[in-house]
Length: 82
Image (cartoon, rainbow, N blue to C red; front, side):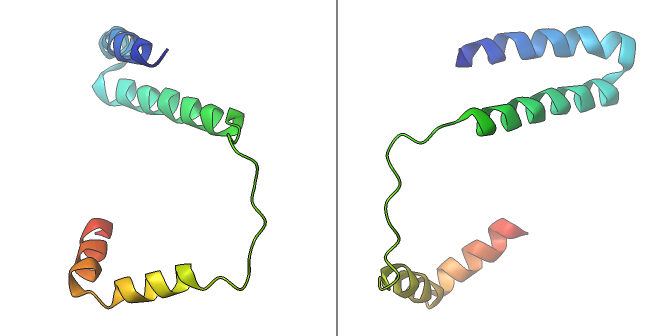
């Protein structure tokens, strides 16, 4: 079903540009994509059962703190955000 969006989206976008104009057609297109994404996120199920949380595990905290010590990763994070 994924390739259908690559065919249908340009067709209805082309059909909307003539009567509505390009900016309005792009806004309607963004609305359709947003609604589709929200519907997909709400209908999604997990594949595996949820694991119990282990509060004693400090692996994630140590990995995150060690990554902040590397200057390249800090610059990459700031650069990707802005």
